View 1 (cartoon, rainbow, N blue to C red):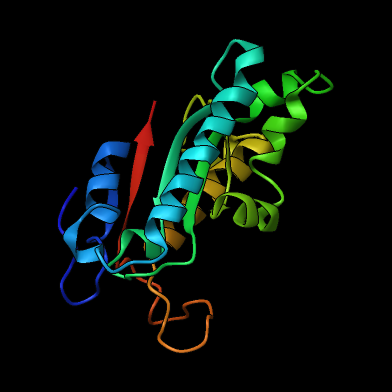
View 2 (view 1 turned 90 degrees about the vertical axis):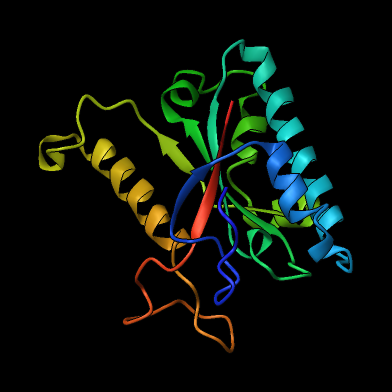
Length: 188
C-alpha cells in the first residue's frame, strides 16, 4: 500500500490489494491517529461485519463474498471518520441459486439496508453483485444483467477514486471527477 498523498490526504489514484493487518496498522494503530476517538470503534464494527459474512455464508458451504473494496475517509488522513465505506463484491449467481433457502436473508441483509448497517457496524456498503463473464471487451454483446454488473463495478471504481469538493457533502462534478484518490481491496 503506498503512502498517503501529503496534499490530498488520500492514497494515490488506483486500487491496491492489501491485507486486513496492513489496513489496521496504517489506519487504526498508526501514531498519526493516536488522537482518534472513532477509528478503533469503526474498525471493531468492521471486523464484526466480516464475522457476520463468515457466519451467514457457513451454512451454504461456499464463499459468497469474493472481495471487499475499502474506500472513503477511513483510508485517508481524516482523524475521526464517521464510518468505513466498503464495496462487498459478492457472487450474485450463488445468491440467485439459493433464493428461498433458509438463512439466505442474512446474507442479503449484509449488502442491503445501508442505514441499519452503518448504525450496527459503522460500515456503509455499496455492493457489487459479481457475475462470471466470458469477456468484458464487447459489452454490447452481453446480456442485460451482465452489462449491469460491468456498469456497477466500473461506476464504483470511478466513484471511489473521486474526491468530493470542500464544503457541504455533495457529489463531485466536473472538473473534479477525475481520478484523484485510491482505494483498497482485500481478498480471501
